[in-house]
Length: 519
Image 1 (spheres, helix red, strand yellow):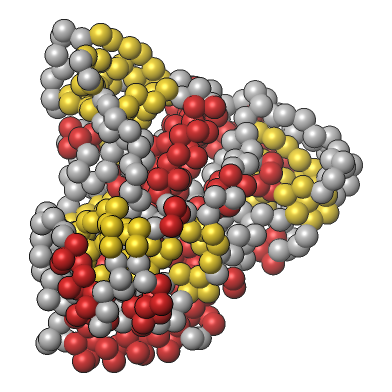
Image 2: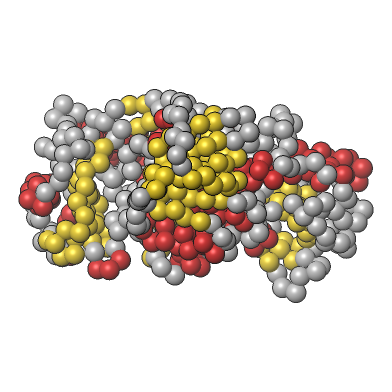
């Protein structure tokens, strides 16, 4: 660990989040929502103007919906019904076939996503310290200290926990001694945002594998993989002349591009952190996993990391976390990171091999075959579920758990005795608490459980879902996944199961309370 200097000002907080990208900001929002004092440190003086990521997938929009933020995002972007599986396949994934209230991708620049999340974080009382770079870190059994170097001063922040959300080259992971194995860069592409472009050539460019997207403020983005330039290191700057030449080679026109706002080169290095936690340090987002941006999964995976970690870290800080709860963050999210990095490597091969002389023709035939398979509804649905993260399932803690356990809870409509109007599951998750649903039962009461960590709701009726047939009760986690479900009908058995589940997930005290009238 790097030692800390002694001539510094010292501040204390519950959690220090390093990095004010989408992952760090959403994590800060989740912590503050749970009453955890949170500070975000960001090395940049101001937010990025350019945007590497451009969209939210269906699960990302669902996360915003759970916290009442979906409207803010949907009003600022544009929805599209699907997304690419690999840039070389003409047929797109169909999100409209997925079981969600948000069966689309939302085209929204990362800069806008960051701005909306920072706005929400500040509403919740989060302090964002811009222009402060983490330069030293030390852990103890009870917390961590991070030295932040800012304009004209150095500050030491003492925190119970530190969350590294500072990207693939970030300081926190390295300072914590967490390995970052993976594959080196073997291919690069170029991206440019232009104020001037001839849109009459857009479809022609897309047919030749160029990604074209209309952005906010009249900008147009082009992403080009030029067979003659794919081995150029990502560290080499991009010029307008090079960009135009690559467009001409790839699709026969330079698409009239001019006045670039941003030019960049990016590679396909793929890495996954050996652990998402070491002591008082946890990793999320690009600090934990990097990959080629096919499928547009990077930002979305980071948001899901933050949603999974937020309530668990808050439980640890507030002192009610059941034994081992915080360790489930690594246990649940690292396999997802592995699946995403493996999946993007496979997609990248479908992009890279057709560009090579040796494998060009066989690779093109393979792409034709896969494109044909994407035309099969069951294949398209399977891959769309994976890319959108709607099919993410966390392993149950017990081998005899109900099949619904670990799955994403569907956002079913509910009619309850106490509510004046029908509601939805995700509306009940606005405050970040657990939700205990008693399905298809008449009567009963609705009151908080123990210290209000759980909202108990008796459901008179709901707009059916095939996975809920015969289910009597469901405990929904704050991140929208099912912690526990049961088909038990015997009152004593049901009560005992419920008590164990509440104690195991929501902590001491909750399992001993009876949340409603006799079942």
